[in-house]
Image: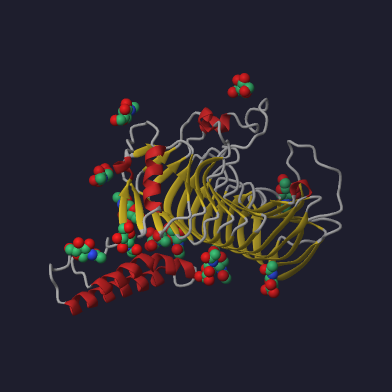
Amino acid sequence: MLPQNPPKHLLFLFLVLTFFTYCFGTYQENPHAILEQDKKMSSKPVFSSFSKLVRHGNTSTTVSSSNIIQINVDDFGAKANGTDDSEAFKKAWDKACSSNETANIVVPENKTYLLKPVTFSGPCQSDLTFQINGTIVAPGDMREYEDDRSYWIVFDNVQKLGVNGGGTIDGNGREWWENSCKINKSNPCEDGPTAVTFNECNNLIVSNLGFKNAQQMHLRFESCINVSAVNLTVTAPGNSPNTDGIHVTGTQNIIIRNCVIGTGDDCISIVDGSRNVKATNITCGPGHGISIGSLGANNSEAEVSGVSVDRAKLSGTTNGVRIKTWQGGSGYAKNITFKNIIMKNVSNPIIINQNYCEKDVPCPPEQKSAVQVSNVIYKNITGTSATEVAVNFNCSRTFPCQGIQLQGINLEYEENETDIADCVNVQLTDIGNVYPRCN
Ligand SMILES: *[C@@H]1O[C@H](CO)[C@@H](O)[C@H](O)[C@H]1NC(C)=O
Ligand SMILES: *[C@@H]1O[C@H](CO)[C@@H](O)[C@H](O)[C@H]1NC(C)=O
Ligand SMILES: *[C@@H]1O[C@H](CO)[C@@H](O)[C@H](O)[C@H]1NC(C)=O
Ligand SMILES: *[C@@H]1O[C@H](CO)[C@@H](O)[C@H](O)[C@H]1NC(C)=O
Ligand SMILES: *[C@@H]1O[C@H](CO)[C@@H](O)[C@H](O)[C@H]1NC(C)=O
Ligand SMILES: *[C@@H]1O[C@H](CO)[C@@H](O)[C@H](O)[C@H]1NC(C)=O
Ligand SMILES: *[C@@H]1O[C@H](CO)[C@@H](O)[C@H](O)[C@H]1NC(C)=O
Ligand SMILES: *[C@@H]1O[C@H](CO)[C@@H](O)[C@H](O)[C@H]1NC(C)=O
Ligand SMILES: *[C@@H]1O[C@H](CO)[C@@H](O)[C@H](O)[C@H]1NC(C)=O
Ligand SMILES: *[C@@H]1O[C@H](CO)[C@@H](O)[C@H](O)[C@H]1NC(C)=O
Ligand SMILES: *[C@@H]1O[C@H](CO)[C@@H](O)[C@H](O)[C@H]1NC(C)=O
Ligand SMILES: *[C@@H]1O[C@H](CO)[C@@H](O)[C@H](O)[C@H]1NC(C)=O
């Protein structure tokens, strides 16, 4: 690409142009929704190669790959032939993680790598990317998870990580579904593995990947700060139990953007300790919708605030936008906005349930304490409901829902276009056209 020995000023110009094109291109892609750290991180490799090249005055390195060490899992013994490749992946990880320069782990395209449960741990010496161009598949046999039934792939305590590449992560979960207590009632209810868990990963970008057929949840962000989850597709059968798409717990500053999610449970679930969660341009269905909760199970305290869901399309889901809390809990869910949402044949398009209780466990008698739900805005939500009750606020007597605002709501029952709002213990304001309305 570059001439062999270009004059220094030309090289400099080239680098500057490349740099500006890169940054400006990023800016144009989505001028509003990119998080600050999104920009910082994606330009980081360019930044470091830029400054290093200038410092060294070295003309022999190409801009695109300079100073990013490429680490191919095949070079560490990965076979992609159906035998377990997790040891090879761990070796590649260890090499990348201990590198003092930005490293990129490559999982080659057109190949399928079988990984047994594996943890990729930090902290690492420098920024890392995990470029999954190919497919990673889990073992089908549940016995492979004897050590820990809760996890398949874990990234733990890795800072400034990027995971991308256009490839697929396949949880191969059929055996887990068949043996779930929700499918086979004679089995006990036990946890199953989350396909991919990010624990305590700050400044993380997960982008351009497909996830499918997870054992239970597909993606879990736990105790992370500054996360972008962009351009992801998540797919599992509508009847696969507990296969949430993206689960957010104890995580702050996360943006979930341009994702297409269809599974057997919540498309997105947001639980205790999560703050500043933005979900934008989400397509959801089949599944249980976009959910805050459940919160406050077993008399626990839960705090969720600053959630915004903007531009979502939900089709055929059992809920639309939902807040669910158990009786007896404490804490709050507040500062929540759901706007610009289209519902198509959704069973409970708008629902707050402060008396949530799973049917397969006996529900306790009415309890006084509750997770307080307040400042929830519903704006520009239209489409069709699969049930007659399109809006349902079932709030607690002792802690009514407060500051609930509806604006520009038009939801019609599929059957006959006539539906109702069922509202208990809720303090609300309607602005402009709202249908159906609470009495
Ligand atoms: C998160 O991003 C913000 C803004 O870019 C930055 O100031 C902050 O230090 C980041 N937090 C962590 C834990 O890295
Ligand atoms: C500079 O070029 C030399 C010779 O081509 C090469 O050995 C060296 O690794 C380069 N240094 C950097 C920092 O790229
Ligand atoms: C996969 O490759 C390894 C190493 O070459 C070999 O030992 C093993 O038999 C192969 N497995 C299959 C299923 O082909
Ligand atoms: C990385 O480590 C190598 C060998 O240990 C050393 O030569 C090199 O200068 C280091 N690079 C940086 C950027 O620290
Ligand atoms: C991967 O498969 C595609 C489509 O068959 C092909 O165009 C491409 O060259 C393959 N890549 C490699 C590295 O084999
Ligand atoms: C592999 O992933 C990289 C990084 O996302 C991407 O630029 C490249 O196009 C991908 N290659 C293929 C063949 O998908
Ligand atoms: C349900 O699980 C029990 C106990 O694990 C097993 O014996 C039975 O065959 C299963 N039933 C079906 C329909 O898979
Ligand atoms: C998401 O996908 C769009 C369209 O393919 C692309 O322009 C954009 O760069 C992607 N975003 C990221 C963060 O990779
Ligand atoms: C919304 O997300 C979809 C699916 O990723 C993508 O095709 C589309 O371009 C996105 N729309 C905008 C305006 O970014
Ligand atoms: C909730 O929003 C109000 C007004 O926008 C703000 O003052 C308050 O700090 C927010 N609280 C939380 C916990 O986000
Ligand atoms: C309402 O939301 C829909 C779907 O996102 C959007 O196309 C439309 O422009 C929004 N209307 C207003 C008035 O914002
Ligand atoms: C619409 O259907 C529901 C449920 O079948 C029924 O209760 C209601 O009376 C119907 N409304 C009209 C206007 O037909």
